[in-house]
Length: 375
Image (cartoon, rainbow, N blue to C red; front, side, top):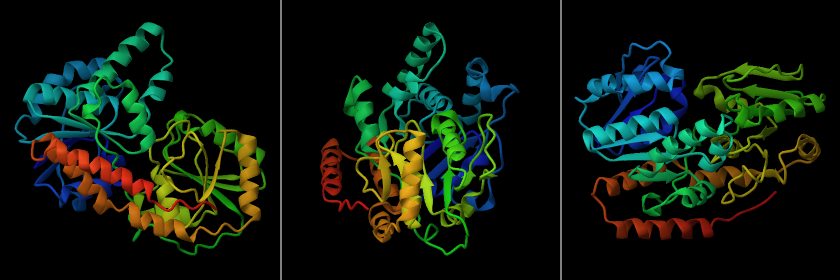
């Protein structure tokens, strides 16, 4: 099987290498097309990279330019023989895969990582623009040959807005490399709360900032690329975007990982924290219901409630030793790659729907029998 995937900015690609490797190991060829950045030598050993050249300097912000560059892009990739187009959900990449499918008569698959309904609710343009944007966005979802959700919440949300759920696959969660993400004694004198992720509005960064200003006695670490204007207070150590290989060190410098997002699918930060035996703090609208709780999942995304929870964890020794064992058992990248490629085979006609249905049942049974322990 040969797959092509768009990933426009390779500057952020290292975070995705484990999941791309898990897929690449089970197929014949995995092609990545990109606009900016340079592929590392070790990436090129497992993936085939193709740079797309366009004449529009404002490409990455203009839908108008994307429309007029479409034919040029199709001409640059038409020589790449593939069986399927695959993308992580996102406006640009979904449109690209939809257009490829239309032009080259090949199926395309979308990895559903976020709640589409909540994304559309947050569009702040005038009603007419919102209506157009919604139609375009939903078109690329509904015309996909398969949508692969990362969690139960995302699966159930997608089922509500899909006209036909036949293109909605079983849940395929992400994985964690427990050989890289593991407990390590990194000394730090103060109780430390860490946030790992993009610095953008939908990640609840304003809420996180309020928490920092209310908890002046707590040391915070923030690691992630800034995508909004914000100044963190003095008790916050902002590290910027860090390389993927350094991320385990951030978890091990922390006594607690906090997640204040407004919406999430299956946050890798939770699984990686579990792998490092670090408790998490978040709220029920973000935490995946199929996971056990190692830490605190509060009712509301409220700064004052977070302060109380932080002090509860600070004052009590949370024994979360089973968290790592849980992740190691159920969330390997090997399992992820196997399940993803089985879904690709269905789309390409190499597997029957009856086999797919049995997998749905097996996956449901697996989650019903997970030992959900709460600390």
